[in-house]
Length: 260
Image 1 (spheres, rainbow, N blue to C red):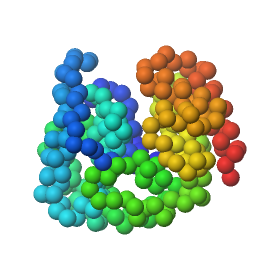
Image 2: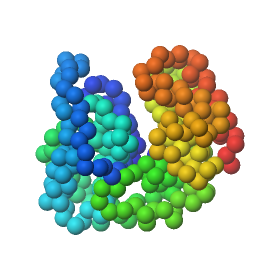
Image 3: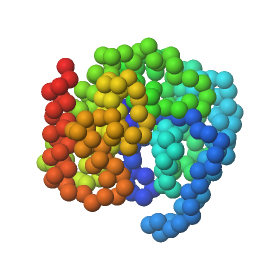
Image 4: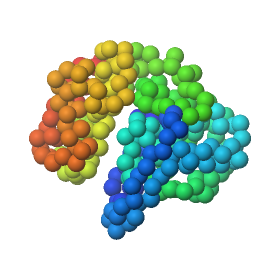
């Protein structure tokens, strides 16, 4: 998916960063508590976003065409350890802009939680369309609009997004079963599968369902089993590595065979 990459957050767990979102003028409070010996601060996201936009304007002025928030904050599902997934699209992007943006981020509070996507407008308008599906629909704008991307996201692009997603999950699942045998990777693969199911549901119904739990009433039994497992894992459910891996393997295999 566009802008998705793996990093290790401050708690030593893998996180996946993607790209953008609108947020209401409300405070998402993250209660102070000790975790792994560290006090986690309360984040007033509304104030933090005001500071981000002001600092962005000071550094780039009107060159910032689009700003968005993605991930759990965008869906209203943030917890005290959630990343702040920011997307910024400039009129154009140079190497020096990347350095300027990095220095800007270093000046902000909660730097360790900030991730996301930075691009120039020309690059995003010429991006692989299948990669734009999740990016467009999983993004809530704060400043500007991504509507210029919508004509690029046609039926072949959605079909390709499903196909590539299923192939990547199949490969990741087999590799993990053989080599890594990692429960954390398995969790990540089920999360990726939930994104593919959003695309499948869109293909079948024409509607993008933002919250995975809402997919349960709309998808078939095969997809429902994957979403149920994803939600179970998301809520710290117990992992049966072999059974859950085999379930995901069979599901991804079937979608590789279905999509042409």
